[in-house]
Length: 565
Image (cartoon, rainbow, N blue to C red):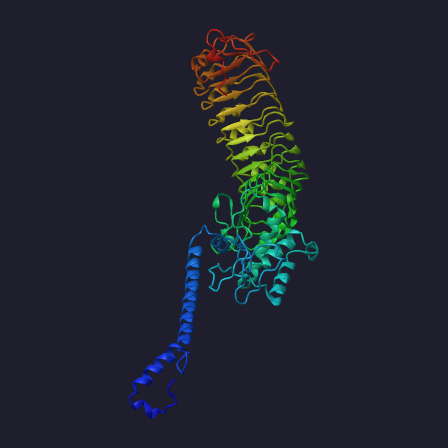
């Protein structure tokens, strides 16, 4: 081959024809200084292909990620969106199969892996961020514990499952605890104790109770506001909500604002705590329809502004505390259907603003106190099914009465003529007692009377004619007494009368014609001893001492044999 060792100056000279041919031959055979150029080109091409491939993998991975996150039906989307919200550091759910190769910074799965793991990705996930409630600082924790110790005895916290311990644990987990003032801390703690003491997990409705939501938005019956105008919890109203257990003492700590306790028709047991005497702002207490026991605590005398007290249908016993007389603003008192006994305190007469008094179905005995006449605002008095023995003449001073019922007691003697002073009386029921002699003349003054029931007493003699003055009377029952003589003709003046029972007496003669003229075939019911008194319009004929009566019109007009009452 021709000499190729030429210097740079030779480049300026044209090659001889022989040299040019020789260089071409050398390049084809791979010889000479320019033989490595094709190799370099190949390497560059391969590197370019690899870079393009890597870019494609990256773009494809990104598109796949976008597709899976946006597609709610994909496994990853479900894993990202459905982890439990209570988890402080959410972990993505596993995919259907384990990754085959580890990516940078991730260890390859080993044979010990019990469950497949989610293929790691270099792209950020969109998992929701759940706020983590930081534990309270030691100083805040100590402050809370000090406050609740002023409400509950320290021994209550020795049992980790006690309502007090559970309420404290819940309170310390409140996210906004550090923003609460002392009053709010105590309020939420006390309500938490009430919730756990009355089996709140099984209430019929407990919306928002023991949540971070402000207690003013916690459930009350009828969705009535639980807080007052000052945003303090004032109305504990959970009627018929399946509350079970006892009433906690801690509720007395809400003395600054609690105004209503409406917990009737539940399954509460135990005593009414004496501590509740501290609830000086109470205006209404309803605890009827539970299984409360013990007596009515004397500490209720500290309820100076209470208007309504209803603890009927429980198992209270003992006597009615004389402290009841301190409730001078009370408008309604219902202690019926309990086991309260002994004498009725004369301090009942101190309730000068009382309008409704119901002491029925107890074990009260003795004389009804004369102070009952001081209840000049009272409109409704019920003393049924006790063992009272005497109705005082002072009853005539309670002139606002519209309803007086003292059924099934042991009242004896004559009916007080002072009853005739009760001009507003519409309903009088003194049945099943031991009254004797006859109706006093003053009964004719009860011009507003609509319903009169004197059944099953020992009244005797003839029925006075002034009974005809009761022109508004609609129902009259004087059966099972010892009346004699004829029914007075003046009864024809009772133009509104549609139910009359004069059976099981010793009346004779003829039934007043005017009464038969008032008989309404659609609504009237007349009961009499048809074998003793001639009564062509009586649709029920009875026998002395017999409870059942027969209808003489059963064949001719069976509709008359229906008693609408």
